[in-house]
Amino acid sequence: MKKKIKKVNAAILIIGNEILSGRTQDKNINFISNWLNSKCGITVEEVRIVPDAEKIIIESIQILSKKYNYIFTTGGIGPTHDDITAKSISKAFKVKYEYNKEAYKILETYYGKKKFNDGRKKMAKMPKGSKLIYNPSSSAPGFIIKNVLSLPGVPSILNSMIENCKRYLVRGLKIHSRTLNLYTVESNISKQLGLIQKKYKKYVDIGSYPFFRLGKIGVAIVTRSSSVSKLKKVNIELNKLVKLKKIKILKL
Amino acid sequence: MKKKIKKVNAAILIIGNEILSGRTQDKNINFISNWLNSKCGITVEEVRIVPDAEKIIIESIQILSKKYNYIFTTGGIGPTHDDITAKSISKAFKVKYEYNKEAYKILETYYGKKKFNDGRKKMAKMPKGSKLIYNPSSSAPGFIIKNVLSLPGVPSILNSMIENCKRYLVRGLKIHSRTLNLYTVESNISKQLGLIQKKYKKYVDIGSYPFFRLGKIGVAIVTRSSSVSKLKKVNIELNKLVKLKKIKILKL
Picture 1 (tube, rainbow over the protein chains, first blue to last red):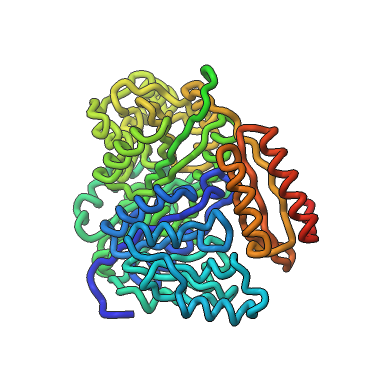
Picture 2: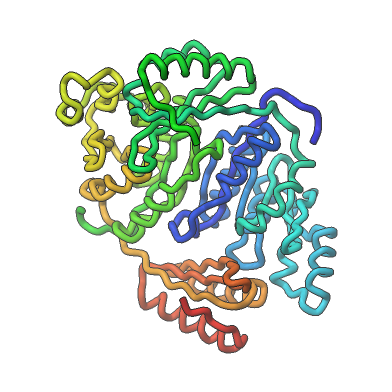
């Protein structure tokens, strides 16, 4: 981790027909967002899910890498024909797509020279100039080139690698959050909530999310801010509102 | 449902800070994709998740609505200050944001005149010219304007409304799929798989997805096509490959 700066953001690019077709429920967005938020103070500001199609991957990388501090990609770095992430990112940055010597060595050692076939060798091919993101569970490394970090799509493998991304990231201010679970409906408090949000617009984000729990309807009021004191102030106002409206709080 | 045409595609735009922050695991992408695929023959080709921020919602709607046949949005159509989807879509299409008479009546009847407060009235405000997507579970309707269909973010409510989208959609060719679960690793078959994909490039999509089940490593080979006969042909070739390599098939 390098020096702290104020606001650091990221986008996630999920590459894979299996997510778009509905065959597979994505779990990586939630995992990466939570990790970036809680461990690095980095806010995910956009996610895109695109098919295994070179043109759209190239275009997405070019747009997102200009717009955000970091881009995390998942999927498409395995040995099969539909794994085109590394090649597409090379094209997006107009650098060579070639064997990374270190990755080649890691994979050759892992599989043994005899079993190191073409499919496996393909996993050592990356954009020229990439640095590796080590993979403690199945050896095939991810990579970082410029501000793009490429990880595999299988959640258990991705999860095992995420800590190895940290060394490449500049940390942002930690975002703190509080949740107030209320047994009420949104429209009962929407007006006052809007006024509180207006007052603290610059410092605190207030979100309102309906829920159903144990047969009851409720609303989770989530406040998020990099300032703990501002967060406290907003929550004092929210608690006043709750008292005034005689709303029951759900303790979890 | 109107007349069949060949290929119909869609994008999904998820609007909500709670998904981006990792607080909430999205379930709507998977549900909508599966429904569009299986019930309407419509292929989801892109998904974006964006914050509750007017500028980025407007931009996303303008870009996606030109690129795809349909756009499904989820989230941001409730009564609170962070619900800005309807207003943003109005701006994206440069139409008025105003009370929809039918929606107003539905909500007024549901809540009763006395309890129909400003927050609840807000849910009747939509882009001028919208048609309603009825909501059997909590009354507040979604809407369709041009090729954009707006649904709420709460999965149980969204699920109850989805069938009411059908009347507005042109159906595409049904996409059929087969899955072959193999006890092998991707790199053992990647070369041959690539050749089969090349041969049937025009008609069949072949995806390869590693899995772990009961402590064993496997690969799911998913073939997708609008032509059942082409799908059969590819699967005959895949079965030949499985036999040749002496790979065990996992029957589910």
